[in-house]
Length: 348
Image 1: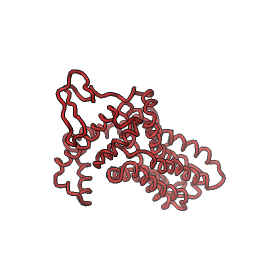
Image 2 (image 1 turned 60 degrees about the vertical axis):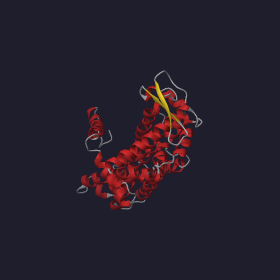
Image 3 (image 1 turned 135 degrees about the vertical axis):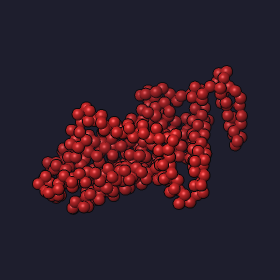
Image 4 (image 1 turned 120 degrees about the vertical axis):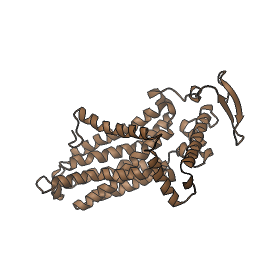
């Protein structure tokens, strides 16, 4: 790498002897060479990474669709004729209707809570496939439901898949995106969620007048189309370079990074980002070893304990403020809906 400016302190050779490490007096980010401009122009410049991110955002569409589809189905005459326990005339209808609606949220909580270790274990790509398989099982059961218990369990299973997708899709997008447009590409996930809700509303609006039970079964069936496309297509996308680096597969991480940036692996910008990714992975391993030295021996029991310890770390000194900020953002997101006059219960 060519020296940049007069602020260079010295140069050293990396431990593997393959690269020269340049030490700067100024912050590293002041020396970073960007891949391109920010915003929409940057998306056009990094078109391959943007395309991969847009495809992964189908996970958000699945999440949004599954959230929106039930709000209209719950008032369909054909649906109420099959599931009389949620009819307004039935005793305890409010409870059963609320339970049915809440099942997807409970499933999503379980799915999101477990997707972290799954994504770390088998990769972001393959964990998306696992999530889609679970979601598809739930979708099939929802479509074929014959009684309230079956539908409720189906919604729970589908919710697990939805929760897994809602966690890993933005994670994959953030890890494959160039730094300049990472925020812009993450917006695709939110856009897909809203788009999925809108599509669900229009589909259920169109099917509610069908003369048979396909009025509500068809919307449940159609939700499996984008998820199946996502599961098949994600297999052709590159692995996350950060995940590869975390597994010690540095050369593969470099190749994946070059493919995502559509640049040769010898490009200065690719090399610089590769160094950053490897340094971050090494820092994470070191920090983990310092915090939990007794859990470093590889075993299933230690893996489970380490996962639990990682969650507990979120509420310990040094990290709890970030955790509170994240929780607060989610809380005020709901409050904002209410402030502007939107309701999360009646779909208005």
